[in-house]
Length: 196
Image (cartoon, rainbow, N blue to C red):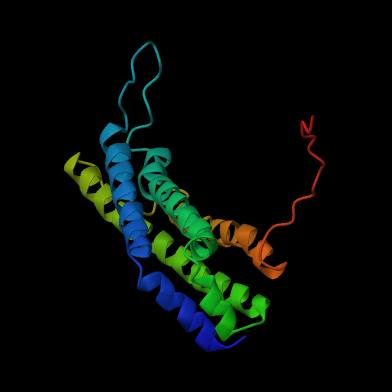
C-alpha cells in the first residue's frame, strides 16, 4: 500500500461537500447538546421525577463536556464511514480507483486509514466545540468550568474513542464486498412461477 493511495482517499473526503457537511453537523449537534446539558443541569423534569444533577457535581460536568462530544462525534462519523464506500459504488467512482490500483485490499486499507483520520478529526472538533459552548453556559450560570472534576478529562479522552472504530466498522462492512469481488454474494433460490 502506498501513501499516494491514502492521500488520494483523504483528498476524496476533503473535496466533497458531504465530508464538510457532516463535520458541520457534528459540531452543531455537539454545540446544541452541550448547551442544553449545561442549561438544564439541576432542573426538575416534573411529574414527580427527581432533579437532574446540578453543575456542582462531577456527573453533570462530565455530561456537558464528554457526553455531548461523544454523541455528536460518533453519529456523524458513522455516517461518514457508511458513505465512504457505498457512495463510491453508487456514483461508480470506485471504477477509476480500482483501475488505478487493481489490487483491492490496498485501496480498502487506504480508505480505512483516511477515514480513521477523519473519525479522529470529527471527535476532536466535537470535543472542542462542545467544550467551548458548554464552558460558556456553565460560566453564565455562575459555576466554575471545573475540568478537574472527577472523571471529566478521562471522559473527554474516551469521547474520542467511539468515532474511530465506528468509522472503521461502518466502512469495513461494504468494503468486504469490495475485497470479495465487488458485489455481496447472495445465495440463489428457485422461485416458482406460474407457467400454466
